[in-house]
Image (cartoon, rainbow, N blue to C red; front, side):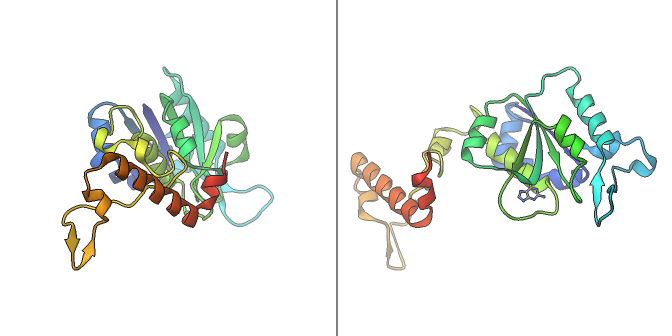
Length: 226
Ligand code: 6GU
């Protein structure tokens, strides 16, 4: 999978993909992340990419022309599946969307800034708009990093059996059950007996039961979805 991220703050997106699972995904050639500086596509003085809004009002708006030029350049010689605008008023991101998008080969992510982008970008250049939650970030970059992380770990070959995404919270609309490691007793705090029993079926049942009760307590909305 190839993901291009269009941003006015490329520095913000250097480190998130250089560690752990995403680093390995890139090294294995399963994921290519390409951070693109929008200013490189500005034809204005001082590489300007934003301007005052028509009709007045506080806050700058990202101009259509540099974004158009940038997306055109990225689309040259390849087929882009989705051009995604990261914005607090987009559809809310969840595991189902992550699963869907992880099946695509080629994505462009556009990070919003200031008051947002000229509406004509959204009308003519964007195919999908995504928000990562009901709060406002100062820009789309951290949201883009969240998307890349959530998609990258789902790509076949990125996780091994032990870390398989099949057992993640949300994959089956259940939160993940509690986990423990050595020692079995610490400070008088004990690991549940069943996990030490070696009885695979009982352990499986216990985990499912724990996942259910945790979901019921914390996120009953997940059990009533679909
Ligand atoms: Cl995608 N962008 C911004 N600026 N704020 C957000 C967001 C995105 N998702 C939640 N809040």
